Amino acid sequence: MINEKSRISCVKDNDRKFLTMDIAKQAKCLFEELAALDKNNIGINRLSYGKRETAALDIIEHKARCFGLHTYRDCAANLVVVLEGTDPALPVVCCGSHMDSVPQGGNYDGAAGIIAGLLAIAHLKTREFRPRRSIHLLVLRGEESAAFGIPYIGSSLLFGLATGNMLDLTDSATGRPLRECLYRVGADVDNIEKGTVITNPENIKIWLELHIEQGPYLVNRNEPAAVVTSIRGNRRYRNIMCIGQGGHSGTVPNNLRHDPLLAVSELLVTMERKCLEMNDAGHDIVHTTGLMGTNATNQSITRIPDTVSFSFEMRSDNIDTLSEFDDFFKTTVKNISLRRGVTFSLGTCQAVPPVTLDPDVITLLSNSFSRNGLQCTRMPSGAGHDTGIFTTVGIPSGMIFVRNRNGSHTPDEHMEISDFLLGQKILADTIKYVANS
Image (cartoon, rainbow, N blue to C red; front, side, top):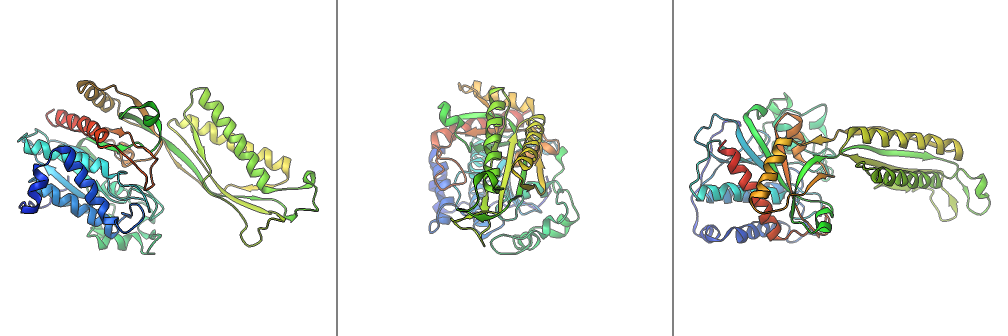
């Protein structure tokens, strides 16, 4: 890790009550304090490099100092909390997650992993446990893509992965370029632009991230937590256009129409059938069309549309499955175009490859489940995470999912503290084990 001057603050009287709470009450208190930053808003709005994200980092830093832990901000303005080991020259154990949220998001996405890591390190400290390896909690910024159109900014900057025009991307809310937003929160923009590596991957022994599950799998199985095996990759066509022929809805017979909306509808139903067939055959694949619309300037209830714009995304934990589904998509587009007399313009495809998490780390986490008397479920992650960046640069990485009801990226996220504590216990147990290795 980057070597900066650390700071320790004295515990104030109004923090002593927090320190005497049991771990469940401490977790609940921390989640409530973070949520209070948005008490006058709908949901959670800790947007990347914004004021509430910064305020949330300040809350975590203050609590860390109350526990007597060292803290600092790295060159990308991420917060680092440190429990120093007896041999600080050894590669460190890292845990953490992201602090930002989507607009009107939930309070547990990202924050659960940060609070789990903080309490793991803090309670090792209070028990006067001195690890052989130093343990670092990373409170990462800018994981969500809502603000700048790209995800994993804070973790990418750690490893010098600022590419192309990344710093010129503008905040969707303020219009400010990422460069200015980084400068405003104290990041070393000059070194970031040079691609300076803030953290050498060789100095990290392991990366562990606890995160809420963002789908219904654990809820449907009635299980509190799971070990993640992989992170689905994706291929995204953001701006597809289907061009047909407009006309009067009452005068053109259906067999003579070149209706782009019907063409797109046929395409999506065909892709759903293919997806379900591949699922039945044991392949991991999902697809989504989240955006669709006719031409706003001439659309009418009495008009056959001339154009339809839409998006198409596919995800899988297997690159060959992604390729097979993508090839079928493009073949289906061609066939429908010829049969219906329409034209599809697919635009640019953005591709992110699947990530397979380290099998040894999966085993470590699974063993921790067993030591704590828990059944170990293994599952892929459908959503992307900072863990994918750590894996990409060669750091052995693993994830724990905790059950979460009502979906994610919504104010209705709901994680039981009892489930959180089970996941947190697995995280703490694994951190302690690796830190003494």
